[in-house]
Image (tube, rainbow, N blue to C red; front, side, top):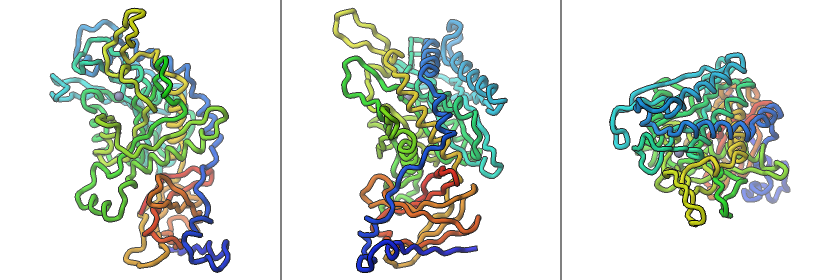
Length: 474
Ligand SMILES: [Zn+2]
């Protein structure tokens, strides 16, 4: 079945002389606005508390080192090293699952990483992840994943024994995964959520690469990967430039896996800022506006950074990008490099030298809680949404001043679609046109009086409660 919708808003809303003026249409059409928060999700977010995050980070620090290579040290004292940390994290997921009637499938995926530049001998690496299966048999194939890395390091990345607290990098990210699992496992979602803690990040993204390949070969329909790495809100006494009301969200523009032909097409059409990862980043920012922008006294924002990562740095989202998945990185606003990748050094009192080391005393647990709530709200929104519209396309070969778009319905039940557009120089969606589907499973076709030559278009699906899918560009 095929339905055609033509939108002549201009004719309805404006005086006739202006009707053909696209600039007027842009000005008078509805601006893209945040959705109302879902009260059930809001209640779940309130359960994410700094005290629990503090407990998690302090516990992870107490394993002394979580260097990935410590899995091969056979004579570490009881309760030290990365294997003990893995046991504890798996135990946390087991406990969370127990509290929701066994709702999580907890996996320990152990493998041997061969020798590499930062792996001097074959090394046992363990990823831990918990799956909350979607309640809808069709939509359960759709997955949204949150991850952090539980391994740590000091100055010498090959030092498997020296104290490596890794409180910010990246016990903070593991705390986000655990809190998302704790808060969201009490709810039901049509799509599937995956809560992850990987190892091997500091040795070369080994754990995440293994998991991303597993996801690829296993046919996981991962719609979005949220990687939290250094989300501690570093608090160094005297630092006046740290900002606690925001988190950076990094995303790649041109997909890592773009073939030369795809890269040529992206160049030709000016689609450098519309990768699937960038739509995930925009969805995070949209969720932040819905849930936290107006929080009284404590607004919280996602700052879109249109770059795969910080200069000269990498992270686990890259592993997923390289397997063709949409993935972004959350990182605090301002990093203090005295508190990352450093041997712990306590200077003599009065020396004026800074304390070195990634210690829990520099982590702001309230800040981590805010990042965790933003992650949880994004996971819950995407997993509740009907899923992405399918085969979004322009009508091919048509020279027109308006734009005709068509797409197929996603797996879930759609209340309406949002046709979005923005000026080519704008970072985020500016304008929206609601389109009602007349029948499930139909191909939708609409024409809007805006030229595709002048703007970027996208389409998302929205359910009756207002949960928005990711935006798909034609
Ligand atoms: Zn890290």
